Image (cartoon, rainbow, N blue to C red; front, side, top):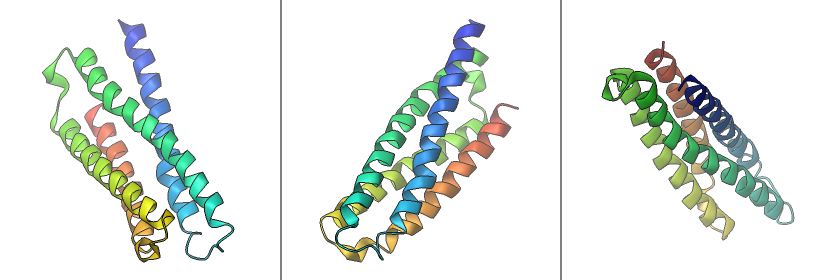
Length: 142
């Protein structure tokens, strides 16, 4: 069973890396949107779509592997500690924020530039929440 746990943990870390790429990359690309000319914007949107796809894949894998790892490693509900519960609350917050970022990003892509000031704020929130998730994971599994 150790090999299964190790492979799941490896997959979980790869998924975390994928999520990190999106969480840190999308705000960097998005910060260029407001000053980009009309010709450059489609390229920037294309980059954010690619990063978003990578992030969604990572997020999906994290949601599956995280609780599964805890369940298998600790033999059931015993692994669902306070820190793990707090971590999962942050995961839900991140999910809501990522969905909101996607909705606002689509609106911006369709020409609604009034949403552009919200995107960097959500990007910062996503980064902070991701960092909080990792911090809670350290305490949950230490």
